[in-house]
Structures are given as structure tokens and as C-alpha cells.
Image 1 (cartoon, rainbow, N blue to C red):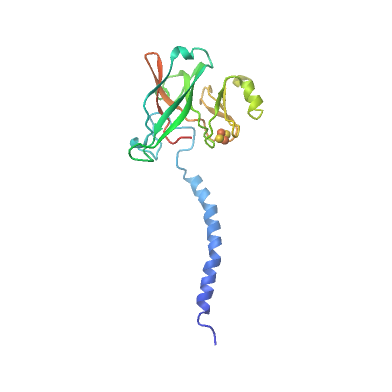
Image 2 (cartoon, rainbow, N blue to C red; image 1 turned 90 degrees about the vertical axis):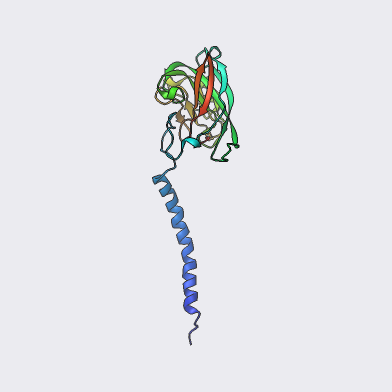
Length: 220
Ligand code: FES
């Protein structure tokens, strides 16, 4: 006489054996779906004044305007000024209570570029201001005025002749950025960084450079 519990047991074992296969399928599909529908528009930062599609106006990081330098302190090409900006994110608490301090650097360039953080990128400027949080995995990168130091201390990257000037270098996994690229300030030259560093928005008020906010979309 057959065991009446037999078919139930077989069904149970079948379901049990299907679980790893279903898990493997989900693990395979998740990155494919994520690739097909990313969180943000792919690309290189969101222009000032233009929100990423997944953010509303109230989602933007807030911060007190921060005077960082007088214009004459950044007279010389490739001179720089470091600062720390405090950003508050409504995504973490509705009261904007969660604050991050974000180190940044302002750099005087010898030529003008279209920088999204200055007058919405509409007017060329020779001052660019970046967050120093690396878009790769969040280390704090350096501004290195002498490109030879980049070659010596950041993995041997040798910039082409037209980029032999001040560069940004991350000591963690050796991403190198060009703050003075004419088309895309902060362009990734080498290393694993997926995009240029985030920019700060700024204004010049009575001869003082004032940081007014940060590129929307995240910290790194
Ligand atoms: S964190 Fe900067 S290159 Fe990886």
C-alpha cells in the first residue's frame, strides 16, 4: 500500500529544489533591470537649475551660503582654496536635521569654461568649484597643482601634453580628473570613477566667492 504522504512530500521537495534556481534567476535579472532603468539619467551631473527626474524641488540639499575667498586670493592661475560646506538632506529627515560636511575646492583656471555651478553654466567662468568626495567610492581626493606629482604618486598616469597642469587625484583607487576641461570641467581622465566630481553652485558677491549650494542628486 502506498504512503498517502508520498505526493505531498514529492511536491515539497520539488518546491525546495526550485528555490536556488529562482534565486539565481533573480540575481541574474536584477542588474539587467537596473541597467535598463537606472535611478538617474546616465551622464555627467545634473546642470544647476535642472532637477534629476526622481527629485522634487523640496528634495534638494540645503546649506547656508558660505563665503570661501575673496577674488584676489585666487588671482594666480591654478591657485586654489579649500573649504567645508554643510549640506542638509530632506531625504533623511523631514526637518533637514541630517547634515553632512562636504569638503570642497575652488580653483582658478587660466581659461574660461562652461561650469554648471556658475550662473547655471550659461556664462563662462575661470573659477570652478568641486566637492572633493570621489564619485567612485567616496574617498576625499586632492587638488594637485603640479601634474608631475600625479604621475609620481597616483599610479603613474601620464597626462597628454595639453593636460599637463593642475589635476584632481584620488589616492584610494587612483581616479584622475581634469578640472579645466573646456567641454566638461572635472572630466575623468583615468581610473574607475564613473563621472566627474559633483560641483558647487556659487556667486560672486562684492568681490567674495560665495558657495550657495551643491549639485543635486547625492553626496558622491
Ligand atoms: S574612491 Fe576615489 S577612485 Fe575609488
